Image (cartoon, rainbow, N blue to C red):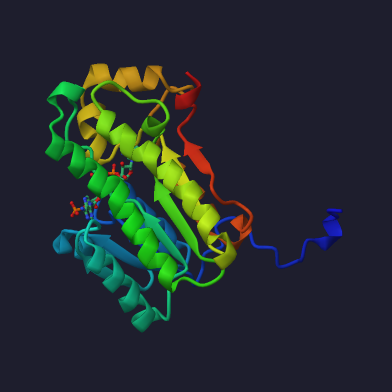
Length: 259
Ligand SMILES: NC(=O)c1ccc[n+]([C@@H]2O[C@H](COP(=O)([O-])OP(=O)(O)OC[C@H]3O[C@@H](n4cnc5c(N)ncnc54)[C@H](OP(=O)(O)O)[C@@H]3O)[C@@H](O)[C@H]2O)c1
């Protein structure tokens, strides 16, 4: 029976990630950069992944704690494995791997979405996340954390974003499958599904008054997500406090999915 007395004094608070070794893909701008700063300020060592080395270097210049950068493509199997090996060599392992890199290159009807665009979106958003998760799980010990950045559009699509929605819905199925497969190893796997945040990816929506108003109108809290709204979910899922949370979707959307 659960008894309050059984909770140890040292029970970790949400966000207790100090000293953890955390990989963040898509770290060179937008939500990934936000997460890099949040984890670094919380005392984690952060490994930043994206294709553009120059941008990654610029992000690390203002971090308060240890960091490494890895420039490469998350769709490259060997690159993911090399990042994992390098982190074992440099830091002795990995505690949390956040598969956050993603693309949403076009808004187009299905008839105008050609096969190469379809494959590109699935390749980065879904296959890239799988390859990162696989490399991570090879080197993670008990207590490892895999976190995927999904999207509310994985559950409730908007017109013209079918490939993107399919990729984000796919992440949920993948996270649940991996959560089952990796539970014996003590690794949890979860998805954070953000609503609408003003990043470079979303600026076409934010800067268009009609589209932006439509988003606000569709969000119970009547606003876009602010930078301070997002990182808490990831910090919790990376902390020891979330040890019994796996195979879930943690939605951070101001009530977008309610309307
Ligand atoms: N912004 C939102 O409102 C929102 C809402 C829900 C979900 N999301 C999701 O949140 C994640 C981050 O989005 P964001 O808005 O921050 O987008 P963003 O501003 O466009 O940033 C995308 C990041 O991913 C990296 N990236 C893209 N393709 C890559 C590849 N093949 N290999 C390695 N890195 C790659 C980019 O760097 P390089 O180009 O240098 O590689 C960049 O760092 C995405 O998964 C997105 O789907 C965003």
